[in-house]
Length: 68
Image (cartoon, rainbow, N blue to C red; front, side):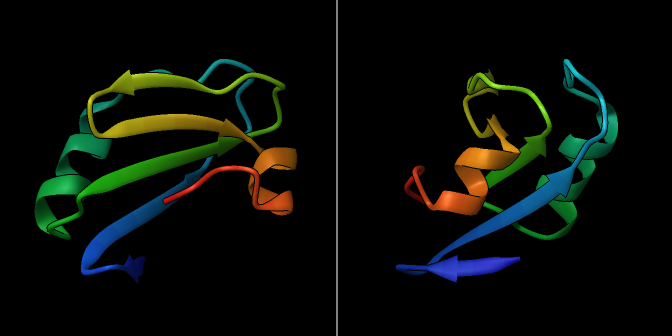
């Protein structure tokens, strides 16, 4: 978890080529009081899974191309 500007962000790493929203992600958001969950995967496209869950490519995460 990372706190930026008073907002709590969580990160989940997936090996899957197409991560989908799982109940465990909702549990993490709730239990950890996260404002947003970022799912990092080995693919090439960024896409939302929900209002507070976003999938981002590993390369984008490593380069800092996304903003929290």
